Length: 279
Length: 287
Image (cartoon, each protein chain N blue to C red):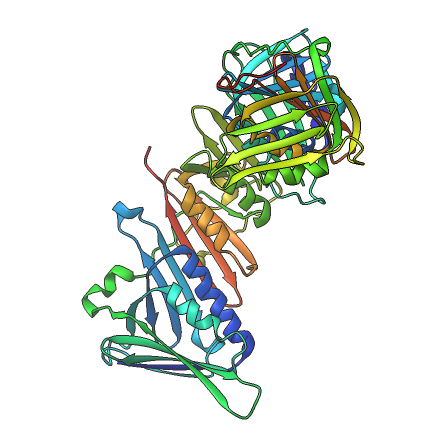
């Protein structure tokens, strides 16, 4: 019905993507929604949506083309900037409460540079059309984070960290992360008005799936920059924590959509400048 | 002036409370007009405040087992009170499991609507709860300000779609814009749309019922088939918060909520439930 109506119109678009359950996209985007603006990159592999703050933190959401049941792109790369708050309001126009019975389908279209992002959502025979203005994409930060420079890497189940991160002492400016081949192995610390808090995880904890630490590293990051990552953590089943030789932090979250597919969200954060990070 | 009414039936108490609750979600103060046959809740806003109007009519015999009133005079046997429906509903909420509810016009230091509620207390003792709600009596000379608004000569009449989806959509649109345009045609289609400099969003409903109105229901309407292209939309752009308020005030599922669109002038909502009628006139906001 929807497809036959629009198949001729589709020729005008550089990108046409369709999926049956819009929540598979809106949920992932909520995990990186800490600023109003996002940059969208579309390629034959799928979508990457980037949000940045203060030139210190970057979040990326990856929605691979397999998430969509129809994904056709006519360019190697399309990029535009868009208001993420408005985009999320449109994607959740039929209500943001997760009513499992209600299924809203989505068709997303983009005709190229200067054109608006067109969304068509349908629920129970009711159709909503959205036209959202797109803007010139900004250059996004390149954190230059590559596997060869990774000093320490830990993969864990998310559930144990959810408590730690949701209870972070916000009177502390910074979150300190210690990773080491020796005791205490993995430790999160805050230094707030009431005192310091330390949460540690031994390497043989059943929560830890992979432990690859070669050097003791203690790094500090501004809590305000990492707080938004709690949303991604809450949705995820697994998390990978990596630091490189500069003390840069990479948090990668594995998120399962309602339909059982896997998507990734990653956060990059540079260490707090005021402190000497040891190598 | 005298007024005394007693409601004994639990369903009637609930129904009366639901009506007052709906009104309380729409306005802070309104006029309660008491006549021999009916109780009315009326709002007539100044143009500067938006110009919205509400007209709600309850046949008293459907609710009250005992009902007596004496108006301002024999020729003008009516009472007009200015009342805060929120205070009224708070008192009525205590009547949820009451044996009876009495509503009386009384004079303490100032005029009051006194609500007496007889609550079962599990033993032989009667527990009486009394609320005194201050009201002000509206003088006879102001009554002409509160006459029933005329049913507008509308361009399209259509039944509203299912409230759940419409409510969700409008609540979201409220975050993006102060105004919403409602369009409808005589082919059962309705659109609600918002437009900002960043985005335009439009939700379409189909297969809605277009009621036909008899001559008796209001000023003569042109027969649909002769005058109007059934696919042509009539549109009115109104304050979105008011519209959302109206959608959220609907608690009891009315038999049907009708929306009459007067192109670029106003939206007129009409609902009927168990002989209680409510009309909400929402004029357009100027650009």
